[in-house]
Amino acid sequence: MKTYNLSAIFGAAALTIAAVSPAQAVPTWQYAFDLFNDGYTGASFGASSSFEFYGMAVAEDENSIFLALNSNLKIDGYSLESASGKVVDWGDIFLNFSGKDYDTAIADGDMFGIHFTGESDSGVQENGLYKVKTSANVAGENVGFDTLQEHTTHNNYNRQGVGNVDHADYFNADASLKNVILDGTKIGDIAFLDESQLSAKGLNFFAQNAGSVGTQTFGFSFSKADLPGGLSGNMIATIFAECNNDGIGIVAKVDPSTPETPIEDVPEPASVLGLITIASSAFGLRRRRA
Image (cartoon, rainbow, N blue to C red; front, side, top):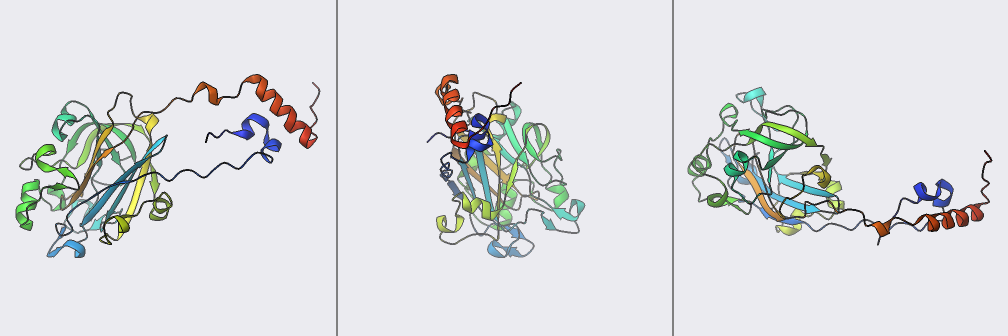
């Protein structure tokens, strides 16, 4: 059902007789889940690790894209004396609509990113949506793993991917894993969403993953209007901790285009004047003389 800004058309008085707008539809979430025993914190693995990443989810409405994260890592990071700034933060989220692998998308200038951790080892410090120019690996200054293969070997498991993003197709497991934006141009703002706000939009990691969830759930939204036109309908989103001790990714189908408002959605001048007359009569409004 279409809705209109009635107060802008009729004035505040007419708004009192307008029909109540229907509640916004709950978006459909797409989920991806990671292994639950590959997060590493000292001698701790899995559920006891502060770096265990569980899931990632993506949804959209007509105007925005939403991303949600579930893990044991707090949004302000993990305190560690030997780390840069004495804190191991989240890395940046990388968003790829190009259909290319991670390194090729970066090299061709086709990668986007989200920075949300404020003071971290990222090359950008203002929270927001970015067009990524270059990325970097900051695991060395955060007592972590340089490559995915190092992480796999150390934890003694056969990792196939992060979430539903396959390593062989998207990352080079033997190359330095770049986890933050080194340089980029900010193209839009992000809105932080806490667990209750995400739940109100229908997010439910617990139900989707048989109760295997982390202690932290939060996410973000950004406007489709901030993305350039011509993007594909498939998005790969990935994120790692600054130490690369764990990460999560998702391949999701979204429509990054921003629909134009149909001409018929705008009432014709004659109709508007008629409605104003009706509203004015109903409330006994008087026009001021010039």
